[in-house]
Image (cartoon, rainbow, N blue to C red; front, side, top):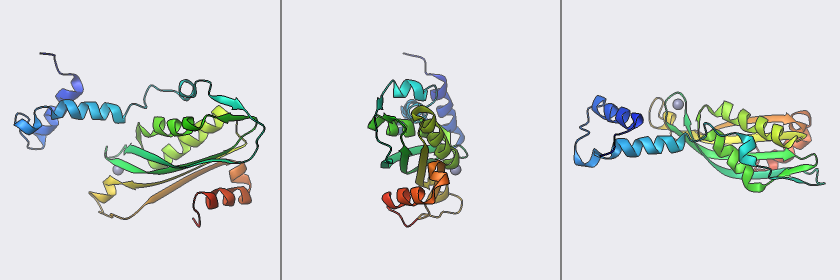
Length: 188
Ligand SMILES: [Zn+2]
Protein backbone atom coordinates (compact mmCIF):
# COMPACT_ATOMS: atom_id res chain seq x y z
CA UNK A 1 0.00 0.00 0.00
CA UNK A 2 1.17 3.48 -0.92
CA UNK A 3 2.27 5.78 1.89
CA UNK A 4 -0.09 8.71 2.44
CA UNK A 5 1.24 12.14 1.63
CA UNK A 6 1.80 14.75 4.31
CA UNK A 7 -1.40 16.66 3.66
CA UNK A 8 -3.49 13.49 3.88
CA UNK A 9 -1.88 12.64 7.21
CA UNK A 10 -2.65 16.16 8.48
CA UNK A 11 -6.29 15.84 7.52
CA UNK A 12 -6.50 12.57 9.44
CA UNK A 13 -5.16 14.41 12.49
CA UNK A 14 -7.74 17.18 12.00
CA UNK A 15 -10.52 14.58 12.00
CA UNK A 16 -9.22 13.22 15.29
CA UNK A 17 -8.92 16.72 16.78
CA UNK A 18 -12.51 17.63 16.00
CA UNK A 19 -13.71 14.48 17.75
CA UNK A 20 -14.22 12.19 14.78
CA UNK A 21 -13.08 8.64 14.24
CA UNK A 22 -11.06 8.58 11.00
CA UNK A 23 -11.36 4.78 10.94
CA UNK A 24 -15.13 4.74 10.57
CA UNK A 25 -16.27 3.65 7.17
CA UNK A 26 -17.57 6.95 5.84
CA UNK A 27 -14.31 8.70 6.65
CA UNK A 28 -11.78 6.13 5.49
CA UNK A 29 -10.86 7.96 2.29
CA UNK A 30 -11.81 11.44 3.47
CA UNK A 31 -8.29 12.64 4.37
CA UNK A 32 -7.05 11.69 0.92
CA UNK A 33 -10.02 13.31 -0.82
CA UNK A 34 -9.79 16.45 1.30
CA UNK A 35 -6.08 16.76 0.55
CA UNK A 36 -6.74 16.40 -3.15
CA UNK A 37 -9.55 18.97 -3.04
CA UNK A 38 -7.38 21.45 -1.14
CA UNK A 39 -4.54 21.02 -3.60
CA UNK A 40 -6.95 21.67 -6.46
CA UNK A 41 -8.46 24.76 -4.81
CA UNK A 42 -4.95 26.14 -4.28
CA UNK A 43 -3.50 25.27 -7.67
CA UNK A 44 -2.93 28.94 -8.49
CA UNK A 45 0.40 28.85 -6.68
CA UNK A 46 3.37 28.33 -8.96
CA UNK A 47 1.53 29.63 -12.01
CA UNK A 48 2.45 32.86 -13.76
CA UNK A 49 0.35 35.14 -15.92
CA UNK A 50 3.00 35.00 -18.66
CA UNK A 51 2.84 31.21 -18.91
CA UNK A 52 -0.92 31.27 -18.71
CA UNK A 53 -1.37 33.87 -21.47
CA UNK A 54 1.20 31.98 -23.54
CA UNK A 55 1.31 34.46 -26.38
CA UNK A 56 -2.48 34.78 -26.81
CA UNK A 57 -2.16 38.53 -27.37
CA UNK A 58 -3.44 39.69 -30.72
CA UNK A 59 -2.86 42.92 -32.63
CA UNK A 60 -6.01 45.01 -32.91
CA UNK A 61 -6.92 48.59 -33.83
CA UNK A 62 -9.79 48.78 -31.39
CA UNK A 63 -9.50 51.23 -28.57
CA UNK A 64 -13.03 50.55 -27.31
CA UNK A 65 -13.67 49.08 -23.92
CA UNK A 66 -13.59 45.27 -23.77
CA UNK A 67 -15.70 43.74 -21.00
CA UNK A 68 -15.92 40.20 -19.72
CA UNK A 69 -18.65 40.03 -17.14
CA UNK A 70 -20.13 37.43 -14.81
CA UNK A 71 -16.96 35.34 -14.58
CA UNK A 72 -17.69 32.70 -11.94
CA UNK A 73 -15.35 33.01 -9.02
CA UNK A 74 -14.46 30.49 -6.33
CA UNK A 75 -11.78 31.25 -3.79
CA UNK A 76 -10.75 30.56 -0.19
CA UNK A 77 -10.43 33.29 2.40
CA UNK A 78 -7.01 33.44 3.94
CA UNK A 79 -8.39 34.07 7.42
CA UNK A 80 -10.60 30.99 7.82
CA UNK A 81 -9.81 28.77 4.82
CA UNK A 82 -13.50 28.93 3.98
CA UNK A 83 -14.87 29.57 0.48
CA UNK A 84 -16.01 32.84 -0.90
CA UNK A 85 -17.90 32.62 -4.16
CA UNK A 86 -19.32 35.10 -6.58
CA UNK A 87 -18.66 36.87 -9.83
CA UNK A 88 -15.92 38.97 -11.34
CA UNK A 89 -16.46 41.65 -13.98
CA UNK A 90 -13.37 42.72 -15.87
CA UNK A 91 -12.81 45.46 -18.44
CA UNK A 92 -9.86 47.01 -20.18
CA UNK A 93 -9.08 49.67 -22.79
CA UNK A 94 -6.68 48.11 -25.30
CA UNK A 95 -3.79 49.97 -26.85
CA UNK A 96 -3.01 47.82 -29.90
CA UNK A 97 -3.18 44.40 -28.24
CA UNK A 98 -6.16 42.34 -27.16
CA UNK A 99 -6.13 39.22 -25.04
CA UNK A 100 -7.74 35.91 -26.05
CA UNK A 101 -11.17 35.86 -24.40
CA UNK A 102 -10.71 32.76 -22.25
CA UNK A 103 -7.46 34.15 -20.86
CA UNK A 104 -9.25 36.80 -18.82
CA UNK A 105 -11.18 34.08 -17.00
CA UNK A 106 -7.99 32.07 -16.56
CA UNK A 107 -6.25 35.02 -14.92
CA UNK A 108 -9.18 35.35 -12.52
CA UNK A 109 -8.93 31.62 -11.70
CA UNK A 110 -5.18 31.70 -11.21
CA UNK A 111 -5.42 34.33 -8.48
CA UNK A 112 -8.66 32.94 -7.01
CA UNK A 113 -7.03 29.55 -6.48
CA UNK A 114 -4.76 30.89 -3.80
CA UNK A 115 -5.64 31.91 -0.25
CA UNK A 116 -7.04 35.40 -0.61
CA UNK A 117 -8.87 38.34 0.75
CA UNK A 118 -11.28 39.79 -1.77
CA UNK A 119 -9.60 43.21 -1.87
CA UNK A 120 -6.19 41.79 -2.78
CA UNK A 121 -7.67 39.38 -5.31
CA UNK A 122 -9.39 42.28 -7.09
CA UNK A 123 -6.17 44.29 -7.24
CA UNK A 124 -3.99 41.39 -8.38
CA UNK A 125 -6.32 40.64 -11.30
CA UNK A 126 -6.41 44.32 -12.34
CA UNK A 127 -2.68 44.89 -12.13
CA UNK A 128 -1.68 41.72 -13.92
CA UNK A 129 -4.15 42.39 -16.73
CA UNK A 130 -2.73 45.90 -17.11
CA UNK A 131 0.83 44.56 -17.13
CA UNK A 132 0.18 41.85 -19.68
CA UNK A 133 -1.94 43.91 -22.13
CA UNK A 134 -0.38 47.37 -21.60
CA UNK A 135 -3.98 48.58 -21.50
CA UNK A 136 -4.75 52.28 -21.08
CA UNK A 137 -7.10 51.33 -18.27
CA UNK A 138 -8.37 48.30 -16.38
CA UNK A 139 -11.44 47.88 -14.18
CA UNK A 140 -12.28 44.90 -11.98
CA UNK A 141 -15.38 44.50 -9.82
CA UNK A 142 -15.93 41.43 -7.67
CA UNK A 143 -19.17 40.59 -5.88
CA UNK A 144 -18.93 37.65 -3.50
CA UNK A 145 -20.53 35.89 -0.57
CA UNK A 146 -18.22 34.72 2.18
CA UNK A 147 -18.89 31.44 3.96
CA UNK A 148 -16.96 32.74 6.97
CA UNK A 149 -19.71 35.34 7.36
CA UNK A 150 -22.61 33.08 6.39
CA UNK A 151 -21.79 29.91 8.34
CA UNK A 152 -20.12 31.38 11.39
CA UNK A 153 -19.46 34.73 13.09
CA UNK A 154 -22.22 37.19 12.34
CA UNK A 155 -24.16 34.62 10.23
CA UNK A 156 -25.30 37.19 7.73
CA UNK A 157 -26.62 35.00 4.95
CA UNK A 158 -27.52 37.63 2.42
CA UNK A 159 -24.68 40.07 2.51
CA UNK A 160 -22.66 40.44 -0.64
CA UNK A 161 -19.29 42.10 -0.54
CA UNK A 162 -18.35 44.26 -3.50
CA UNK A 163 -14.80 45.36 -4.22
CA UNK A 164 -13.49 47.31 -7.17
CA UNK A 165 -10.17 48.46 -8.55
CA UNK A 166 -10.01 51.08 -11.31
CA UNK A 167 -6.72 51.77 -13.05
CA UNK A 168 -5.71 54.31 -15.70
CA UNK A 169 -8.61 55.53 -17.86
CA UNK A 170 -11.21 54.04 -15.50
CA UNK A 171 -9.78 55.98 -12.61
CA UNK A 172 -9.24 59.24 -14.47
CA UNK A 173 -12.49 59.45 -16.45
CA UNK A 174 -15.78 59.27 -14.62
CA UNK A 175 -17.68 58.76 -17.90
CA UNK A 176 -15.54 55.70 -18.74
CA UNK A 177 -16.11 54.37 -15.26
CA UNK A 178 -19.86 55.02 -15.50
CA UNK A 179 -20.04 53.28 -18.87
CA UNK A 180 -18.37 50.22 -17.38
CA UNK A 181 -20.61 50.16 -14.31
CA UNK A 182 -23.70 50.51 -16.48
CA UNK A 183 -22.60 47.71 -18.78
CA UNK A 184 -22.06 45.29 -15.93
CA UNK A 185 -25.60 45.82 -14.78
CA UNK A 186 -25.25 48.96 -12.94
CA UNK A 187 -26.69 51.41 -10.62
CA UNK A 188 -23.88 50.45 -8.30
ZN1 LIG B 1 -12.84 34.54 6.28
